[in-house]
Amino acid sequence: MPTYPNEGYPIGGTAGTQVSSTGEGRHLKILESELTHYTGGDGFVDKGDPVVTASGVIVGVAFNSAAAATDYVAIDTEGIWNLSVFGNDQNGNIAVVIG
Image 1 (cartoon, one colour):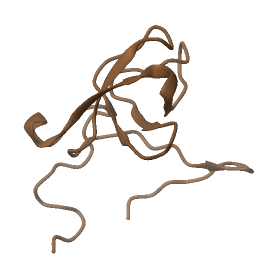
Image 2 (image 1 turned 180 degrees about the vertical axis):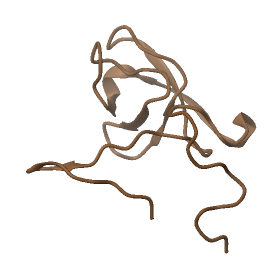
Image 3 (image 1 turned 90 degrees about the vertical axis):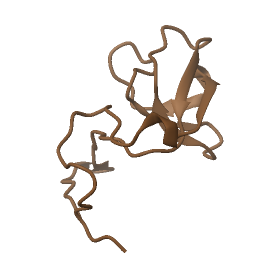
Image 4 (image 1 turned 30 degrees about the vertical axis):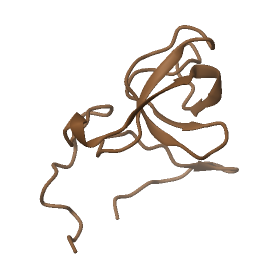
C-alpha cells in the first residue's frame, strides 16, 4: 500500500487540474440545480469545482461552468484532482493540514 505522499502524483498542483488521465474517469451530465458546490462569483458551478449531487450519492469535479440553474454540467466522477480545500465550522474558519 502506498504511503503519503503518493510518489506517483505531484503535490501542490493548480486547483481544478486533473492529475490522472481523463480516460480513467466516468463522465456524467447533471443539471446545475441538482448540484451542491462551493458558491463563488455568480453562484453557479465553475469549471474545476468539486461537486456533489443533491441526493449526496454522486461526487465529482465539474468539466464546465454553468451560467444558469437550467444548464447541464459535465462532471468526472473518478480520477485524481488537485482541489482547493476550505475548512470551517460553526465558529468560523479552522486550519486544514495535509495528513
